Length: 219
Ligand code: DC
Image (cartoon, rainbow, N blue to C red; front, side):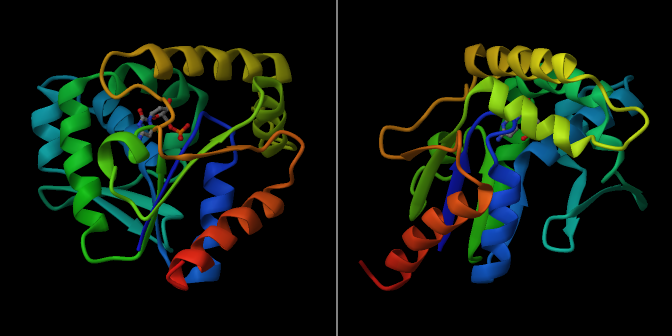
């Protein structure tokens, strides 16, 4: 079974997908982490053609999508923490707008889905990567609600940005992700629209869980 979940930053995709992966025994794939890792890679190796280099990079997920390492020519880098910094969040939209980078990552994402029961989240999973998925959902929420959720994730950390900075960064990324010419963030006509503003992420997971159960039951 293939489940494709798209939506803007902070719409609840990652939390909900992890819950569903645990409950239904699915392989979880966070494609945003791959774009972040590609950005990390581009900052580390600025000298050569990025898309060509990325082709030879293995993206190795472990702990069911919770950790990510990159491997190339016998060297391995665990980038789990490094890809969550504000510097990467600020630079990722530029890398994700590159059509050749997208082509390389899209092919890797489709390979993960082959023969697996997957729940894959991102911006173009329902439209480009897995348009034939069994279940397609577009999650959304107001920018303020999404900023509130992202801000809460920073709580207690010394380098935490202010709420206003988080909101500004989310709005900038929304604009960049929705207006880029190649695979912009948009709802597929046949994807279910789920506005998560005012819902707990548990409620969102239960809603999609019912869709999975209906699909498994052959409805
Ligand atoms: O889900 P996230 O915020 O970690 O994603 C990081 C960036 O990667 C986001 O700004 C848009 C981009 N992205 C994309 O263009 N296509 C995807 N399938 C997933 C993420």
